[in-house]
Length: 198
Image (cartoon, rainbow, N blue to C red; front, side):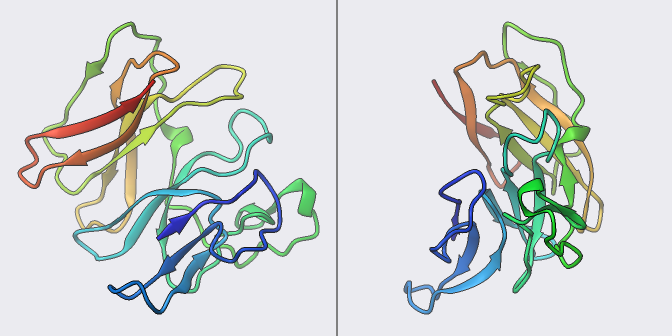
């Protein structure tokens, strides 16, 4: 179970916050599986490797592209840095003396997404090979000088299913305040359902 932080940047008192917690099937035996994850959303097990992957919304107010939103392969006992660090070796300015050398590296950064021009209608661009790839919904920026997001991207995964090798727009065109909330794929791969909000 993923629970986000209560703030943009703070020392949480509740250990369940900014963490992924593992429970037994009956809800007992909760323990922190991984920490330092400001707001992990869209967690799913990789069907090829069994690894737990999750998108992360990191802190705000470091500029337009820092830190980029990213996907983590969430590993047992690992620290992903928040609030002290936003990357391995990169402390947040408010924690300038923090040791960020043991922060788990990110697997895919959304700053690599190709930006498209503004569109008035939703466009769909599919690929012949999407099996094993991940679909991520981006609800859009709130404080960038040039707004971005409000789209679905396809994260291309290598043939072994072990790492992201590319990020590409899949569906674009939502106009604020409408934005995608989540995506689900049927096992046959023929249908994708996108939920949105206004």
